[in-house]
Length: 256
Image 1 (spheres, rainbow, N blue to C red):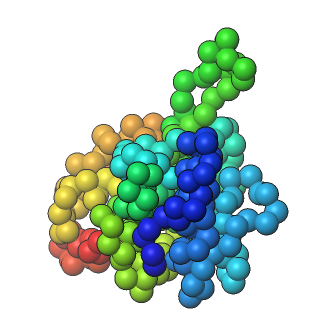
Image 2 (image 1 turned 120 degrees about the vertical axis):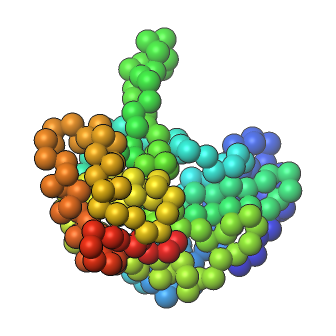
């Protein structure tokens, strides 16, 4: 994987156009598919909404989000209602998030968020556009990365260092178990995993999991049996391979 951007496109006058050509060109020439053994992805030929690249072998869809700023807490995305429907119908693409330097002509960071890790908790509506705007009242959205478990933020490039593809694919492969859970129920699993990771410890107790009750109640206000749900979702996370039950109310999370 070559982390240098192609300087041949610098003839473009528009900065946004230059950035798009640079980043999409780099992705087409350097990215591999994290979902299967394919060593490259191709530009989406059918102009599908929100899909920039597909794997030619397994047909996994990817959307590229590139920025000159460091990868932060939120990623600007498209229309809120469109993204909400995509998540609920399990049609959202895998997200490729890139941090690049247009002056240095270099890729600094690339991570992938498997689509199974996107829940409504991670989709935040933005303020409607002003009445004076051309699309008055239009509501966009942000992808809130803080609400995506660290397990679902898989580094391909970190601080200008390429991560081993075998590690990337192993982490992506583990996420496939989430696809067997109904989208309406998947959010609970993801929110609990995110909350458990926020404890910043590998081993935890059932009591500590119960201590996350208020956080999870805020995300799922219609659920009145949060402790029962926590116990249920701990079993789901165990079956998926994200944690191990040690006995006596003790658990161990899978190392990142």
